[in-house]
Length: 98
Image (cartoon, rainbow, N blue to C red; front, side, top):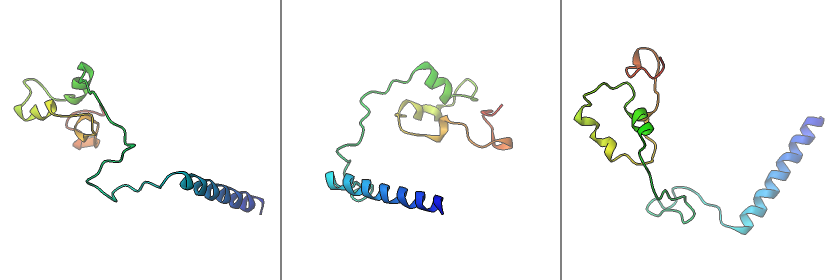
């Protein structure tokens, strides 16, 4: 019973806080206008590809590097699965998990 009362009190507190927060500024909902970047969205001004970045991106690939990896020169600071460990076992062809 005591835990139910605490749970209800927590829910009421969260709802009242969200009501106060929404009164101060409008709620942002992603995707409402996909052609428009939100004014408060963070902006990356510079992105430097350090030697460590290239080491991570080329992990498990032997020299000479294939020309198909030229896309790395155009790669920005956004997420790409190519430079992060993926599946394990027989699918780990770049030996990320060894």
